[in-house]
Length: 263
Image 1 (tube, rainbow, N blue to C red):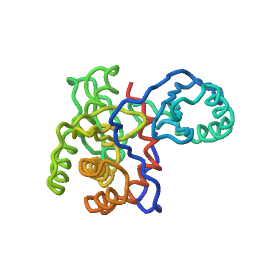
Image 2: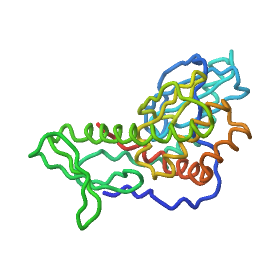
Image 3: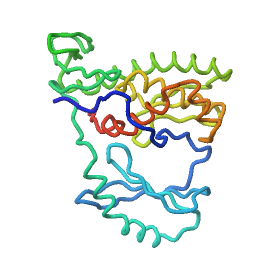
């Protein structure tokens, strides 16, 4: 099986998809919502900045999020969801399937598909190799641990790659990151707090190098501009001239990366 979503970065401009972390946690109500025969977790988040209700599907189609103005009655949320039921069904129908990491499929590493090969005879390590069919990820050890070992490999690669890029971009803007963290988030690829803490999804290591660089540049730019205004985007484009193309690639292909199951 090949995850066929790698394309040249040639699409037109799109809206930003990486969001900075909010300085204060918003009140959240968590429950479930049924749509298209599926029961999905739903988060209802109250935001002082919200002027209307907004609805978002998490990457990979694994959850829903409604942002509401303060003090909105619960009945208004239910009416809002009812009005958008058809929209939800149409969007969820386009969500990529969730491929399970297993021997024989291909997953991307820095944008290049690698076929997973299981060789149980050796201890639990991963070897990157190549045969006449292309790049390989050879996973040793027991089969049950294969998905976790590949996830751990991507985490190590993320730490190695992203920390170098953070140093590069922070030196360029004269700012320092207080800490760098790696997570497996379903709703965002990165974040930056007002204290200077940067967070990244280790899944970004499946994207092409230019997109990885864009994500780091985006979050580092927030160390100086904690918003998504014109000054922020100007700085982001200074750090990463391919901002528009990479931003669009992540918008088009990010859901497929989030959908891969490492369990």
